[in-house]
Length: 322
Image (cartoon, rainbow, N blue to C red; front, side, top):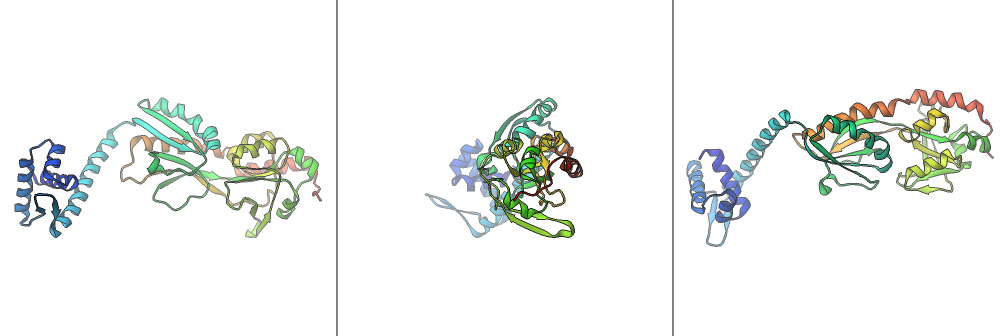
């Protein structure tokens, strides 16, 4: 047996804890395993394993050799896997996680086109607004909206997450158009419970001037589509992402408030566990998201948002609610 094979037998013995257990795993006899270890020790000129009738233990040299051997065998396996991935088509079950509203509106519509191009893949899409531990729950990739926490996950940016303070024209007709962030303190501002400091809205004006205002209203919810529905019905003001209100915005059902003041943008990412060699199914789906999601989310555009607000604002009352 070659040196790499002897190394594999040695690592298997350490993992299994005995020659007999390693022999069963490898489909060899215990004596064959013992001979392989003996040949390896003879070739290295050092004892690697202390043998007793009850247990095996590594010598100091054996422990150092084991650490290096395990790393070498991992590199060999990953090199073989990389070649297979480069030449292999995406296949197998792909487990994806996404926030509920974003998953429904922007991930789900892309599944059919992806599967049409990758017929050997099947998808399990889980939509949930709670934090998902990808490794613990066996998720291949997740779409995350907003700022990312520090982690060992790999992240690929898919799009900006543009947010607007908005209301329906009917609400502005009744309550007036705010002209300064401080005016929002006198409006019915609806809030999203999953957002940190949900009642403190911060804006950046011309020249980088920052302004914060504490808001409040009669609806607070952990489901962003509740805020969306209330805003469209003219019930109040909310800070909502363009990916959620874009269609209503372009149709004139909602108006951007304070377009000269900018709410800090975040981003939308695809995240997946670290691996030296990304599997074809994950790589293909992340590429699919990047190719199609960006176009879906940017077709409204920030410049268009401001232009739409400017065009709509004169049609409604310019007074500030007292």
